Image (cartoon, rainbow, N blue to C red):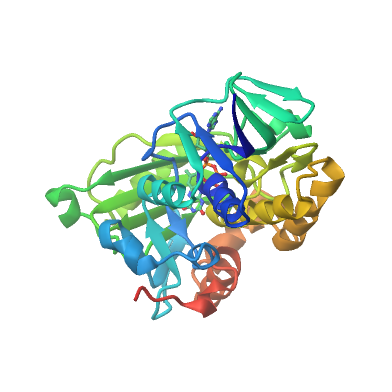
Amino acid sequence: MDSCDVLIVGGGPAGSSCAWGLRQAGLSVVILDRQNFPRDKVCGGWITPRVPAALELDLADYARTRVLQALTGFRVGGIGGGAVETSYGASVSFGIRRREFDDYLLRRSGARLQLGEALARLERNSDGWIANGRLHARLVVGAGGHFCPLAKLTGAKADGESAVVAQEIEFAMDSRQLAQCRVRGEVPELYFCRDMKGYGWCLRKAGYLNIGLGRADPHRLSTHVAEFLRFLKTEGRISFEVPPLHGHAYLLHGTSTRPPVNDAVLLIGDSAGLACPQSGEGIWPAVESGLLAAQSIAAANGDYRRQQLQSYASRLAAAQGSSARNLGTYLPSWLAGLLGRNLLRTHWFVRGVVLDKWFLSGDAQTGVSVA
Ligand SMILES: Cc1cc2nc3c(=O)[nH]c(=O)nc-3n(C[C@H](O)[C@H](O)[C@H](O)COP(=O)(O)OP(=O)(O)OC[C@H]3O[C@@H](n4cnc5c(N)ncnc54)[C@H](O)[C@@H]3O)c2cc1C
């Protein structure tokens, strides 16, 4: 039978970051993913500078053959209202294509890759787990995203979970679309829903355009998406039909009740429900939790009982801090809408609260350059 120290189920940013950390600690790691890579992932593809910093990415090398769009400002407004543009004068974030980014992280992780194979069976034995009847691992890490099959092993219950629901599309623009797109690469656009329970975005990366909308309220998502697309056309931001959007869901930190640890099993990234409550940023929490899990696994020194792995849960809680939510989840929707529409017209609120606090979480001060 094939064997390894740690089996990671899922090769997204959580799984590949964890594998990278574990390989540096000298453990043998297999990543199992049901898809072949490169693969598409429903996502905006916006990352904050702490992602490449924590993973020690050589951004110049990355950008040689892949899309890396430096973002130096944001245009922010309300759907149906005006917009305010903020410029930072330096890169405060990046736009990547998940198809390229996830594949790059996976290949550099140093793990043994078993791609195109879903986890179909997992059995416990006296010394760990047997996956798909042929691979023995002392410990398993659930990195399979929102619907990760390992989530139930830590006692997670899907009932009563309140997920963010979102739709997105990324496509290469043809020459006509390029001419009819007023969204600039370095200035992505964010437009909040009238009730402040979600927002739509336009992120242009080289010749690609990524458009989507996510909401903390699952009702009438398609209606909100249609309204957003109409608004972009009315405002002249894009003057062409976009291809159909694809949907997905994920949990925000503070709404997730999924325990991250059990005997010989840890959950990381979306499988643990860790995305940032105000912005929906999930790539950074996926990377951070993957690295923290790797540290705790290495420190457990082969003893993978729950109490030995509990340091992961404590490190995660300390790293994630409080779970402050956005305006729309605290206030009645008429009041959130009224306040939101007015506040989104002011430069101080857009820069000081929406961008610096909700979206950049202090990263604006750490502008990064691609050498
Ligand atoms: C529309 C939308 C837009 C978003 N935009 C952004 C954004 O711009 N920036 C940001 O930071 N976050 C964004 N997010 C959130 C972000 O996409 C996720 O938080 C992030 O992908 C989580 O990474 P992960 O590695 O935990 O899971 P994933 O990236 O979902 O990876 C999970 C992997 O597990 C594999 N898998 C699943 N089940 C199995 C199985 N049974 N067996 C084997 N493999 C399996 C899948 O094939 C997949 O490759 C967005 C989310 C959505 C829905």
